[in-house]
Image (cartoon, rainbow, N blue to C red; front, side, top):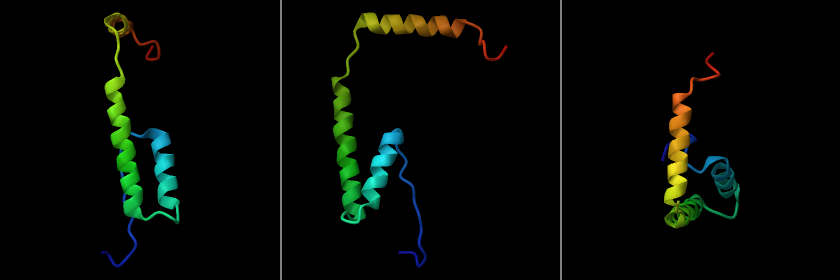
Length: 80
């Protein structure tokens, strides 16, 4: 353990909501750091398993693919 206080960052894809949740977990005086990490890990595993439930129809995928191709062919209005 270092003799001086140190800070470290846990980087993830939780966005603003994940950062706020992690902040509240780590600021809580009733939770130790290992417990906070355990809770974050369980939340990540739980939410990532929900990704298996997301399904898009072929029609939706074709429509989005067509929209992306159309937008990529258009000149960038902001650059003009």
